[in-house]
Image (cartoon, rainbow, N blue to C red):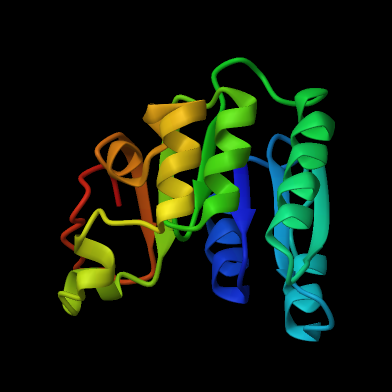
Length: 171
């Protein structure tokens, strides 16, 4: 299992999943976040032992983040099995989908605070995405368009107990 985290909340949920599923030393952790955010480093350092972990500072330049994601995928290939699952907090974000595509991931999971189940925000319920993302994924792999990923979620990890996941999967 690969956890693609971008916030302290993602790291906290990932930590709970690792403990609950006894994944000590069997998971891969990717943290892609803004440079200089100490709270991310704090929670990153608190994660249980992983098979491999990497912390990447995001650039303000899209192309540099794409290159960083490509390098992450090359490093992860050494550790990942064929049937890997990527878990992230927001599949609308370009970089976790690119990583999943580069690794040939077929299983997707979501981890979040469950707010989408309480607040019917159009951000969570609409399958629209940025034009550049749509064009790129239409070319490199239609399975990685946001709408296609959200219809193939296998697990849903949340901190909210009475969640009714909009995308199915498990709590």
